[in-house]
Length: 67
Image 1 (cartoon, rainbow, N blue to C red):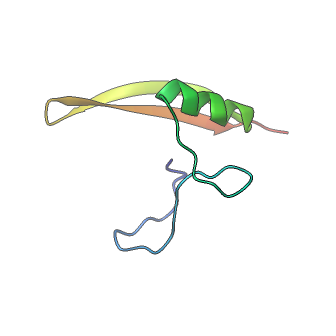
Image 2: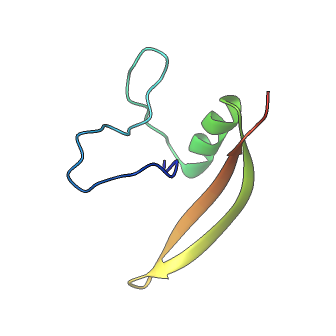
């Protein structure tokens, strides 16, 4: 997940998604990940694909819902 934060190649920051107990999340599919994000206050905005080396790379844009 890219929040727009600065990300250096050799950064020590761990950006994996974790559950409330600190365990790494494993998603079965992109829809599973989108459902998780929806439950946690994000809304779907747009999806698009770009082709990189003859393979489609899908991007999903989400927005944090206002409370």
